[in-house]
Length: 451
Image (cartoon, rainbow, N blue to C red; front, side):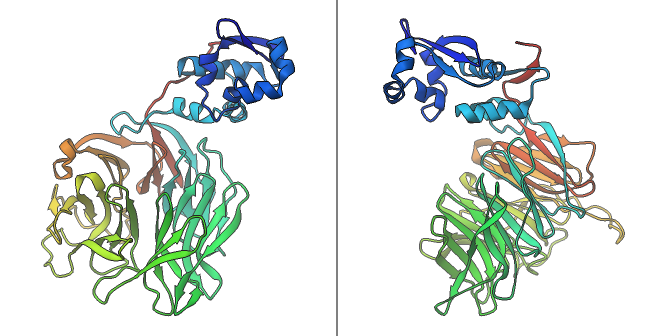
């Protein structure tokens, strides 16, 4: 297959392609194309080495697009070509990651475009959306979790004993963890599902008094080796559990104290920079707000903040959501009036520095209001308000000095009920039309009459 002058010749579906070894090596060491020019492949395929030509029984039109992608780093797809078929061919050659990288770039809140609006399958309103590592996502509707791969193709719907879902997250793009309330010893709780097969693979349990038991799993967070969940059991199993990803066994359990709730936490976030877990127990799950950083290696609370002993001042009382900006030493919070605030984590129990103090008129009982949600990606902060998402950037890693740099809004779907970031994409879930939007930074992808 190798020719003088570093020339590679490929016969794909009867059409001859001539390219360079460098172009083929751009596919990556794990790809089929790169393996074809390796020593092991040539040793096993001596006949191909003699004829200096290798035949691949695939569609040449799609290979032409993919070969150009390897040459230029840009994806130019002819009008009328099936994207789904192109993804299938890219998967065969082992270069699907290259296609994804060309489809959209690194997440830049100031350049985001809405590239897809997906209508949900459930009859009721969706409550939560979570992003996957590869740009896919899942949406929780009552007891169901609807999963979409990175191309937004719907997978098999998942449910854990038809119990309403509290939280969900991706262990990896092929596996989803679902958290629900427990009903008896074996119903509900927390479990791992295979996305492609739609099958339950493992049930997570807590250990109390030497016995493994089921429990209510509230909020969920996942890092590279472990998964964490807020737990409430029937035998004093109130706290934060930590499970090993490989074995699925409980490795740590931090019990809550009499004055610091952990089991009712509604938000968990892993902080890779500080190697800690943010735990937030907020309204309506807790009458007062409690936010803490847990060091799971020593089972200690390393930092904490609460408004339990602080007098309510105007509109500053009820914290509805929180997210940590790890490298900025800041926790961002939002209250019931959509006001954004910041807490300095370099000392315990600091006051909230509110960015604004807007207080709207009274909302009638008949009027439905979606409270603001927060998401963070590096030094970029995303905050939903009504039917829009506001983008904030932090100069010099000082979150308290963040400035609004963009506003994202779609014309359909109504108010926003949740937002999430994953795989360099922003996912926005609406609560009226049962739809979610996919926002991404434009990549080097185009559709034109180009081949």
